[in-house]
Length: 233
Image (cartoon, rainbow, N blue to C red; front, side, top):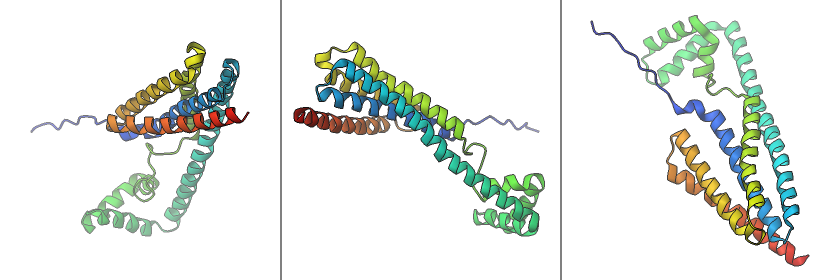
């Protein structure tokens, strides 16, 4: 008899939680800090003022990202826990109805009713709440909300992204700061888009164009506002 060989499969969806938070943090760090620097520079700010503004933007942005991610993902986690508690109560109060409900889900997916009922009974005999969490509520270990992980990832990646435009302020000549900052930041964004696309198994060219376009738009708008404010002052 031929032996059955099972090869492990590695699906990219397992990266969704940290990848989304990481890309969002790094992208926001580059775009917001570079835009702030360009806006202040366009308003004829001094190099020292520009560096202070960029540093303040880095600290404020990192804390804002961490707090925002934590609050947002915590809300999702609270909802998941509430749904699981409700499901646990329903399992205790009417187990048979929950078996029929789970069997109905499998039948709706194309399993014949007899097999669906057997599968529901077997899965619920092993882990009734886990079966309903996955197939009724759509909650799994891979997709479970993790507030602390999301907050720390966003803060760390925002800081990393924001440091790149700040380094340009230090090394670029003051008379060409805006031009160097724009070019370097767009290159950083293009690289970020390519890395994120590769990590997530998405088309690299599309992700690169998308992230650089919105970055360029943000920098253009802040540069325009900086020039108007500088001219007014």
